[in-house]
Image (cartoon, rainbow over all chains, first blue to last red; front, side, top):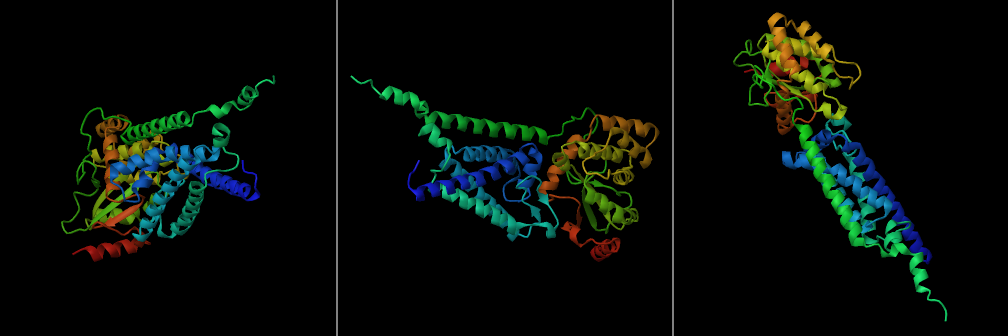
Length: 157
Length: 248
């Protein structure tokens, strides 16, 4: 625990970054984990990865999201979790921007659902902003993983 | 001599001794097991739950391999007629709307032979809606194709689509559609057996896979000679115009 005011403030910003990124990942994972077939279809709809591999990604992704989200909320192995969370955001951003550029009309399936939707219903801009914001949270935590109220502090000192 | 305080200190902060490597290893194992289990469950949910008992697993009228669509009007389609590929899920409300608005026009074009109508019955909504009604109704319609009543059965299902998405179809409803489609007598017995055994369940799964491989990730999707024209279809007349333009 730091004693100077600036360090404490940074610790609290870190806590906020952890909670935002962590909670969003947990919610996103929980909404998909019980519908593996839909999750696989959502990944395939991006038409980037080969059919079978895209299916595996769709099945595995919710589990990874939930675990990384839990680690972030708990503040356990914050830097490692933030690296994984940040890489996920980069992958999502590449997928969404690529779909946007190719003129696909798909729902990103970020929070369940996915697949083709009407062109007017697409919301790539909003998805990109959200994931970019979450990536900023991840970058902060990778650069400065020490945060307030973390399990890391309690367990490992 | 003062008592040694270090023991007391150590007792006050017992968790200092927790080994990060051990905790990290446990979490890593949890992640790996979770991912492997998720992939195994996902793969098992992909293949049809009902295994075909007997008979031909691919229904009558299928073209383009085991996951191909059913040609709804093989007898009447003229040789120069353009191909309409119709991708629908029987549980998809927008498909129900399309059928209501354009179904009669599509059927009349098909019956007149002005198009070659190929219907691909998708079943991905089972995953979204967490039921099996898309697969069961598609299987039932494939059984109707064996009886030579595909288009009639297809129309009956959409006419009987529940107003609430996700309500699904009961076996009684599926049988009612067979009656509406005019499947009777021995053909009805065969249809009943084919439907209850899930004879074409694997075919239905194959159609879904083939649809995704063809870039179809939503329903309804209408292709005219391979080109997606879904967004251009506003009225039955727009369909007729597109078909006329594509007829050489």
